[in-house]
Length: 523
Ligand SMILES: Nc1nc2c(ncn2[C@@H]2O[C@@H]3COP(=O)(O)O[C@H]4[C@@H](O)[C@H](n5cnc6c(=O)[nH]c(N)nc65)O[C@@H]4COP(=O)(O)O[C@H]3[C@H]2O)c(=O)[nH]1
Image (tube, rainbow, N blue to C red; front, side, top):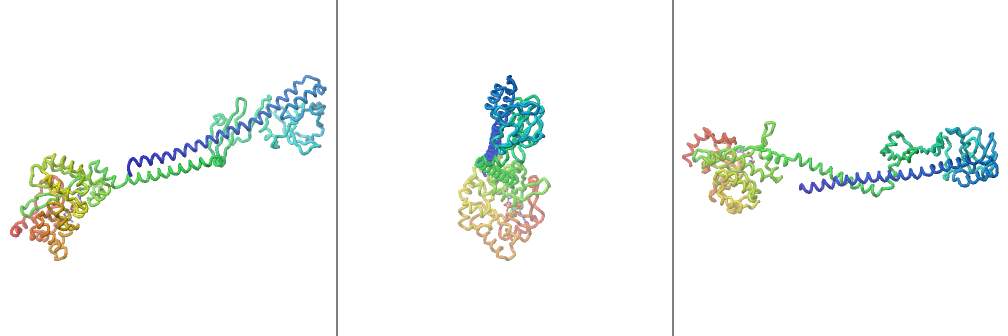
């Protein structure tokens, strides 16, 4: 996945979550403001009722006429008429009602002997009192000592029964101050209320609201269900985008983890940290009795002292598109290790494994210029080995011709394992072939493979190709090769892959020297 695509997906995922968060904040905000408006509206009604009540009471107290005189009753009636809350008011002395604004028969009031409760200033309050004659209607009666006031029942008929409930609607303060308190407080402290901070609880959003000076603060619980019901389309959209964003991010995180710990990335890091090293396996020329070349073989040392073989990481590098970088790294290491030495040893060459992808990669040609020509190494001192099957698949004739024109040698690696026929080999323009170990191992054992090897050697010779036998492990194998005039050999019989320093001081093993003497008769 491309980097810019990942960034887009990351942005989309984060965007989804932001939409969810913003949408959710919006919902909460809207629920909050709705709740505050509701609160204010709910407050306004009992507050105005309370104000109306006290205003009426004050006006009654201010009537200067003689109690129950026609003028007094006239004024009382006027006050009662203009009040929304007070149904009637009566003057009483020594527990007896003497007159009332509307002339209501107060003796028909069925007031129980004990009031429902006594307010802070000593007023007696009866709630849900009914008239004897009109029992259907219930009212609240407040006895202030001098006056009796009949309060109209609320529209919803919900006059509370208990003093604390009544107080929750209409509290008569000690100094005549009107306070309205709702019973919705669900456990906020005064400090919390005054900070007016919205709280999220399991049940819903708790919205605190305080009325202007002198008024108490209230809380209102807006249940989640209510919020969801009111804003479900927005909620659904937010939830969908949030879920999509979340999934996208989880998926991206998963991909990132896979990338982070992928073998491809480990190889990239190993290249960046210069962790790879080269070992060189010498190639022996039985005709001259000397090592004439060496194959550069990559190794990946691990912190625990072990080494990862190229068979394991080269295919991964190819799959991850890193083989070009690996090959350039090999060229760099080789020129570092042996550049100066190769300038002294003009007859010695190094074989480098390259991948068909390298052949039309301009960076590869740049690396050849930099690490071969640029270090004074002659191009003919470098042989480029390409696996037979891959070379045919890549149809790389033009590239091999170009490389040979530049002076490099081109060899087919693992010859015999692919399907090169005469035409292929001719079209590829090669310098030589390396007989694969799987054939060398059967040399001289009379098997079909052994006969095929003979045929391959014949074929290469007819095409005038150099021959190198890989994987020579035993003296009979060496004999057999010499018998067939194959003199260039590579294998554990001669040497394993060694460091650059060891390569420069390596002597052919004794067994080879002895056999070489015998061989000189056959060659
Ligand atoms: N049993 C046995 N094995 C022998 C004998 N003589 C040589 N070998 C092993 O055979 C392999 C020869 O290299 P290859 O065929 O090019 O096969 C190489 C080559 O295809 C690839 N490779 C190694 N280095 C590079 C590199 O730098 N670039 C690329 N693209 N491929 C590389 O990895 C393969 C394996 O490399 P190595 O593990 O180093 O294994 C080497 C070498 O150690 C022998 O007598 N007996």
